[in-house]
Amino acid sequence: MAGYKETPRQKMIAMMYLVLYALLALNVSKEVLNAFIVVNESMESTNASTAAKINDAYKKFQLQNSLNPEKVGPYWEKAQVVREKANQLVKYIEDQELKLVEVSESRLTKQEILDKYYRDTIINGTKTKYLMLSEVETKDKYNATTHYMVRTGDKPGEGEAYVLSKKMQDLRDVILKTMNLPEDSRKVGLITNMKGVTYRDNDGQRQDWEQHNFYFTILAADITILNRIIGEARTAEYNAVNYLYGSISETSFKFDEVAAKVIPKSTYILQGQKYQADVLVAAYDKKTESTIKVLQGADTLTAANVSRAQIIKGQAGMGKLEFHATKPGPHKYAGVIEMVDPKT
Image (tube, rainbow, N blue to C red):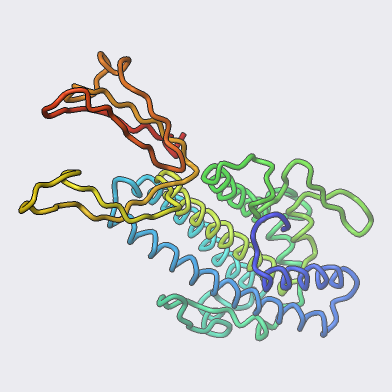
């Protein structure tokens, strides 16, 4: 789980989970079982907080898109792809949590399980069902859930855990592409059977990700693992959306200095005339070396006459324009200011 951005709370919960997972291999005591329930509740609370942050990020993003759809639109569309894929994975995992309870509590129907173990709650203004894991009677059992997840015996490698890891990889691929990261990057979670990552059982034998997480794992641990994956999915989504939002400003010109400027209509006036000038605040980047091209006697600067233009090097974001007055009468000039496009 290391490598991508997690809050201190997420890191603490992840460490607690790893300790409990190690203890689970030794003994399923009442204390370990209760600890899993506590960690699971903490994960669910953190996931709800992350979902709220994501919701706020989308609202901010949507506002910018409504103000400037031409500029923001391409990034907003990519954010919607990430949003859809993340929601699909989270919905699938939530469905699998219910299915695991069904498998474990085989004597009950789906509706009976919903009535007995689920409570209504509101998350980000949306009504949803909340699993009361502490009340599930078979939370310490593993035979039925192990067979469902990894298909022990007759059809190994065909369990639901393999479907889960494929869906996790699908979302990971979308986010890696969105954030322009290599496929082996650890800046995004949702890592399953990635090259260079190995898993081993208590005897040191190699396992795949699916076996390592769901083979002979009690129901309480299964639910906790699934909520941990939801947390990884939401964190990855949040980081991707922030990356896209930050990319909007990367295509804009940056300014680090403002200054008051007075632009007179004339540099001299006669007695009785009015002095007129435009007063404004100019923004510029002191670190940018702009190039100014000016051609005297021209109305516009074109490809045909630009080679005859005087070149002025800008310093600290500004250039100084000077002409010698060689004859009386009006004079005209044309010019351009060349700056580096921030997108290049």
